[in-house]
Image 1 (tube, one colour):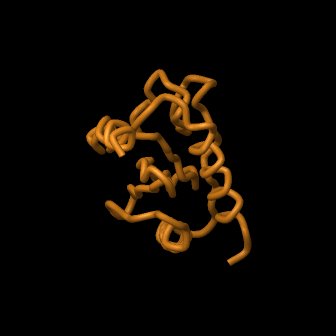
Image 2 (image 1 turned 45 degrees about the horizontal axis):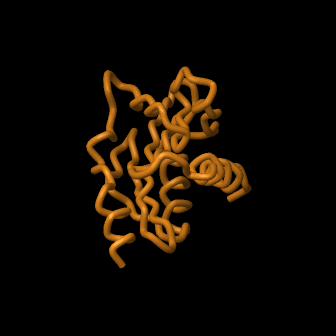
Image 3 (image 1 turned 135 degrees about the vertical axis):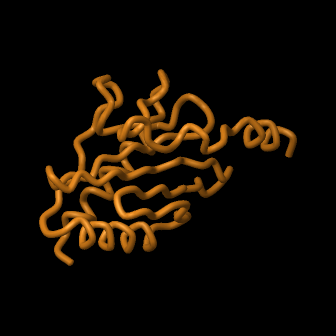
Length: 138
């Protein structure tokens, strides 16, 4: 039990989330984060593309998040969404943020673990799963 207390006790808060100058924050220098707006090849991932209105894309994304296991919505603004995903065993939290660029019809995102260094590509795989689900016909 003590090992679990130590592991979960060192999780960062969600203070490293949110926008800076209208952009998602860059990933830290650890491999447990991906971001569409990060300049580092190590963290870079392609954004989601959508057709139609931002509101339609937003509602589709919110529905998708709501169907995913261990996901909870933190904030849902017209152009920004923040969700938390918890791991099954140790309940580690990953912060996932989405930023809508309606002019380019893109949804930028950042997915980052709050704790630890390695995530065994959990964040990248989750975002690729979201991309696949988002692209499926409604």
